[in-house]
Length: 398
Image 1 (tube, rainbow, N blue to C red):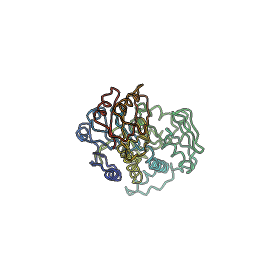
Image 2: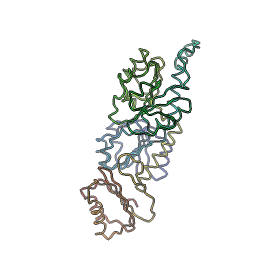
Image 3: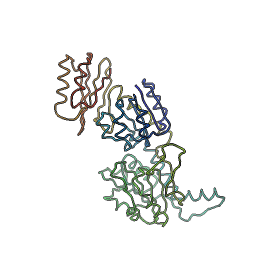
Image 4: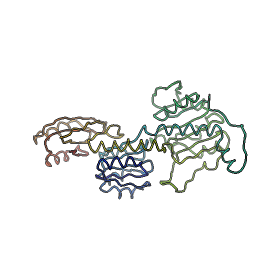
């Protein structure tokens, strides 16, 4: 089977798949829609990061594709609904780079609080700019975390250890860790926080989430960070509030439009502003995080192909399946309607195939049933299962 890995996926992911018997092709940068369609011919596994868009058109034109690995946290670059309709399983790495993002956020807060960007620039220009004005300790400062998921909650714990007073807001009901205080609204958080950091997800509803109104509601001379998604913030509005002095500093790691490959031109309205830290989407770009992501996602792809396990996938039912040597495993994705399992088992019975084990899980739209048998599965039986109107995808693991 063939795997295509794009965007500098860590070599550990490549070697894990090669060791499992896959033919692996790697490419340095992202591909556009037409390039990706061409590259996916005959490919069963696709590995990407954040720059490659796996659109409905790509999925419609990649019939051999079985699974996609997002070697990152976000999956908004993939049309998950169409992937589910095609029986293409999508995995990501929801935990592997959280510490790297948290450490970058802490570092950037300290950099802005001490105005280190301006001190650094002055010395590079040959000016001895030793001045305490506008520089502050972070101990005792009020940190407001917007989005209390895997990253936001870990940031909460680390920040509290440094002496921050932590406040957070999340649309879901999340348990406060340590001494963190939950805010009932974004407005409440903005009214109290001296540092505001965004860690929201990439759902389409978050587009334009933070703009002129929210910046105006922040405390005077507050600091702002966005290490979540570029499209959630109005950066022109942020520029206005930085230039007016209402916002004292900003750190931005993500942008609405980002170059596909290293070395390409980049432009932002925030370039050249004082006390602004711009980083090229490197929140999770540490060697430790990328190694862990490479191992985690590649193992998920391998386990799905080799034994049908879909644990921690993001778009289809989830089954954690053990290996069963000496048996044939029938993997079947189908529309979640009544009677599918009975019809499947009826077809197996017609062909005299005895079921050794069977597991089923469903979501609102899809069902996933895995059937283990000892006897051979004749092609006529498989054709009958494929011809069932509810069948999305059928595969046999020997």
